[in-house]
Length: 216
Image 1 (tube, rainbow, N blue to C red):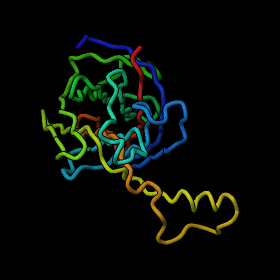
Image 2: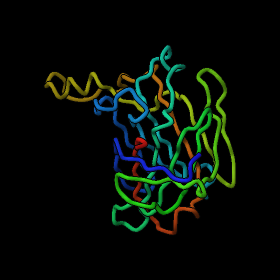
Image 3: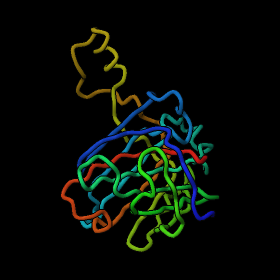
Image 4: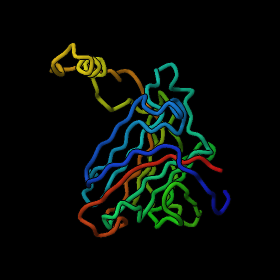
């Protein structure tokens, strides 16, 4: 791997809070269906309460027949941005890049630049994991107090899209209970990293968002 690489941002989901969920399906036509397409972002306290877990899902609405062929792109970096000072500018980043059959992780570290352009330096590598294959057992790597996963997962986001469209069209007064899971039976490609809270600073509240960035 080269010592550093420059990436430019493609798509963004921005959210704030210590425990949070964000989702976006079908709304980004420029990147829909490729490795840059972010569908979900989750951040929550780990089972080990000393840790935080970050989950980034991409390439949503994969049918079971299409999932085996879906791949992470070596030219796309996934970057988790963390603001621990409350100014909505990233103070730390966690970066994930595919090389061969593995996903490599870097950070949490102060970014060389903020905003749409990012640089990776291999000295900040914290671990890697072999990418899990569809239909096989999940591969989880534990290294240096961190845990890593990359591979296909069932799409976890529940949304009744048909009823939502009916509400917008004025033909339904509200959602049903229970609703219909529009995304049932579809998959995503997921990147998961669990990190010690001590590596994220001492702030009681974190603002965090995720980007995908393509190598230039």
